[in-house]
Structure formats: structure tokens, C-alpha cells
Length: 246
Image (tube, rainbow, N blue to C red; front, side, top):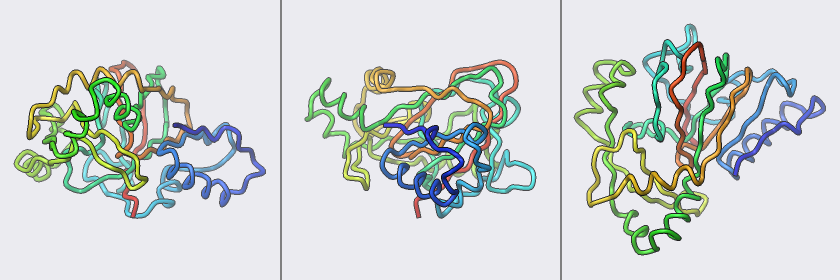
């Protein structure tokens, strides 16, 4: 489900590693590597160049880098609780993937991930095929919560509040696998009744965590994985770029 590139060493060329990153991203939807330990001089923008169609945010960007956002105790998301979510679930510009690079792990607050293919399969086993199949035609409606207003420009905030995004609660990915798609932190309603709490109960059973170290880079498929983070104290800084497949 996830891949660490810790087996790589300096005998692998950057071209070989580039190809492996793309190959394993397509296969697993999640790739982790540590640039400091493995001796590669990758920076987040180097990874982003492997994927086309980078999406430029309009707030909390790193000085001098208009496509890199700062996720930290003082910037985006700050120190509070960030519940299970899919990045930009409420956005009408689709983000297919996310890249995070650790500048400072602080006290090491982990990010927890969940493969939504595994949740789909567990839901079928738990609730039955008929109930889960109904989710393919039941749309979730998504809007950013009020406490994230500071993350947006005034124009972007007004648009997202007036135009909720609608997305089916289950879908078939381009890889042919079925996945659930719901973002509890931003889901406001559904076309038909949907017990979000009982589905959230399945997430921890399919989850794993990444304990950040300086230099870590994570790349994940935003349509295949959800993630969350607990509140923390102290300093913590990550850099983020979101991208489209094409």
C-alpha cells in the first residue's frame, strides 16, 4: 500500500529515482522518501516537475515560490486539529495529488493516512454490497468550514461558500479499483441519507501514520487517500505543492 525508498543508495541516478517515484506513485498512490538520509538533493519543486499541471495557490506561499505553500504552526492550518479530509474537497479546480516536504518536524506530530480502497472493501464486508453500491450515485456536498476562512482570498472564500462542490461518495479510479470519497471535515450534506459517523469508524482500521523527519518528502494520490493530523504545540513546518495528473 505504501512504499519507502529507503533501499535506494547513491549508486542510483536521479533519472532512475525519478522514474521509480512516478512508477510507484501510479502503482501504490503513496511514495515516501527521505532526502537527507538517502543522499539525494531533491527539493519539493524537483518532485513537482515529475507531474504536470501544478496548481498555484493564492495564500500562504513560500516567499519567492508562488506554487509552494507553507503548512506550519504560524501559517496554513496552524496548530489545531485537522480531521480526516481529502485536500481541496470543496475546490472546483481538481487536485489529484499532494506533495509535502518536511522542513522542521517540531515535536514529531505524525500525519495519519488511510487508503480509501481498503475502506471501500471493508465497508462492503461490514455493511453489504448493496449499501455501498448506492454511494456511487449519492453525492456529497463540500464547503470549507468557517475556521479555515483565513486560508482563502476574499474572492475565493465567497465562491466556495456559494458554490458547494458535489462529488459521488464512491467512484472507480482510472486504475480500475473502487474507492470511497468523503471528507468528514468539509462534508456538509448528501443527496440521500449517509451515516458519515459509521463510515468514519472504518478509517482507523485502514490507517497508518508517517512520523516526520527533516527532509522527508511524501507524494500521495489525493483521490485514493485521506489524511488527518492531531493538534500540537511548538514549531512545525512543512511545504506543500498540489498537482494534477495531466
